[in-house]
Length: 163
Ligand code: RP5
Image (cartoon, rainbow, N blue to C red):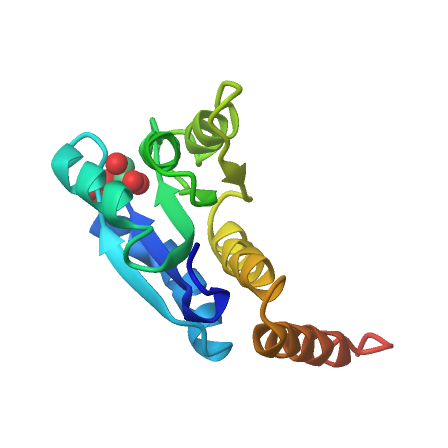
């Protein structure tokens, strides 16, 4: 078992085009000063890359995997099939079906291999990062402090009255 203080988050996505959404996960992790790496891994176009990544993730001290994919979005489920590291799926808003295809594909994992599914698009990418940080914070008081301070700033930013 790896020491929690060394764990990092992996943000993976099926295409360069997904980065306009997944950059929001990266921004949150950067802001909270959490170690992370980003990768393009297409489950159907780069299957070997997928296997290599998922098999070696634990050795590389990855504690949570955020996987964004669109359409027939099998990337998060395939990664979760290979590694027991928690996988958070972000459904990318697809052109044809507005991300409903991605959402249903990711959320409807059959029992036995779980993927935590977030909202479609930017909100999902942001919440995936916050949830990844919350997982790491469970056994790391420094990360817990950072997360609570981020949440407290968010609370303060909400005005009591509309202008
Ligand atoms: C999926 O197909 C990717 O996750 C992306 O959301 C979608 C479109 O990919 P590109 O055609 O932009 O490469 O595999």
